[in-house]
Image 1 (cartoon, rainbow, N blue to C red):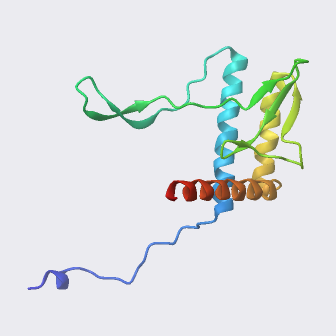
Image 2 (image 1 turned 180 degrees about the horizontal axis):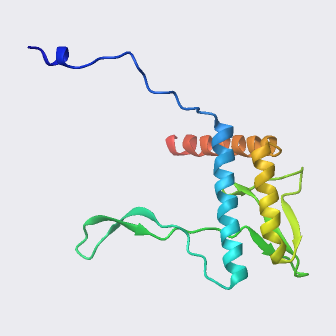
Image 3 (image 1 turned 120 degrees about the vertical axis):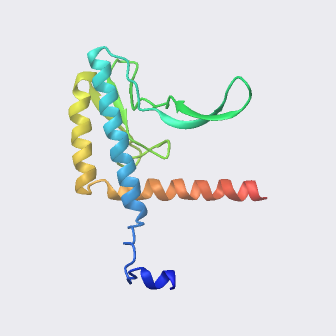
Length: 154
């Protein structure tokens, strides 16, 4: 008796995932904003922010490559200028994302106001208000990566 005849076969296929670059960039930005909010909350509470660890490959004492949890570096999104005013910058691909031409920073004033500003930014990203800026920054990042690949290939 054939094994295939004993199986129940169907014409089902897995659902195709949405491969929209704008949606991926938006989700990454939302993740970054959530992490920035956790970091500023920890700072305001006087705690040290401990980002979730990731799996990475390292060499142990014998020189063997082993998988282990590695601390992940998170870049702080806010800074203070010379006058002591706190500013916040959104980053896409490690570069500041201009919200208006020539303006990438958001003036906050004091650090304790930052969580509310981050919440407003999260709502704006979910509502699609920053899609044009996200798309422009993602496209610029893609072009930069393409230029890097060309230089390596040459």
